[in-house]
Image (cartoon, rainbow, N blue to C red):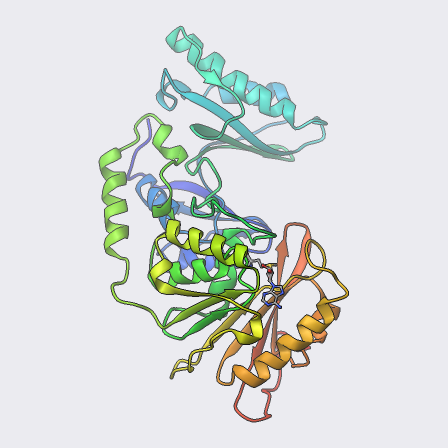
Length: 397
Ligand SMILES: C[S@@+](CC[C@H](N)C(=O)[O-])C[C@H]1O[C@@H](n2cnc3c(N)ncnc32)[C@H](O)[C@@H]1O
């Protein structure tokens, strides 16, 4: 049976490249990371704390709660070890369970096989103890078990998130080439935005950057936006504790308005989609939307904290006619120089040649992956006058 207040080993997973941001989030929530991996961070936490992580984390995919770790040299070992675990205390009789796995082992050619062996072991164990088999299949909307088997070590986790936490539930209208919510959140966090400075998001598409920024600015826990989590389908799920944590997260939402947030796009359908998404996310009152060419975007006066431009122009891989893009990037550089004095711009792009067309010197370059494409987040400081800051040691062009 799961204990709410017993420390356990968690693996919080994320997209490749986001682990440093996830680590910072975990630290801010009071969890000292044990180990940072390429696609996740290990921490120790209780189940109660893990519930909360599902509500609060902005850059995570899944919060995995470890139930066993064992030496595993073959699919037969896997079956026997998994069958030893008390699944009848974890999966409800009328429940449904699915298994997701990541495997790298010399005895495994098709990763579906360990997946199947794990599922069989769970179902056989429950049938043996209860006389009835639970339903099992590929859907991840109820209990989800996660297997990670690398070399001769296998770990079995309960996936407390179920569906990816990046599926916040607000993006019913994705429009074209949207950024994944977790990547957009990482870009917002990397920019240092906290709601005290005005934020401008030209070429906003379906509004993911502006919406994630508004969620950060208002201190709104992204998990409040959706209702279904894997943890709710496990035996021992504590509805009262869960609702208490949700209420606490709601109370932590900052009252009042952050500095202005402006999002614009030349495509009226994109702006319509972005507005609808912002309504679903409950932040439409914090964002001013405009249909216009980026050069016409209303730019509020920067304040004592400056101002931030977040932008993700097309870069030719998925959208846009590449022959127009060099001119777009050049014009965007002119917009920054002419209209955004006192701001810091963070430009997210997958094309180095296009970024050079901006005609400004980036003084920081951070690497991200957008799917399989390596992208850069480039920082441009728009000082008054012609002066451009010398590049930082960490990322000079
Ligand atoms: C890569 S998409 C942005 C996606 C966005 N980050 C999201 O998550 O949905 C780029 C957007 O730039 C817009 N765009 C292209 N040229 C523009 C221009 N000259 N002025 C304003 N918007 C433009 C396109 O309509 C498109 O929505």
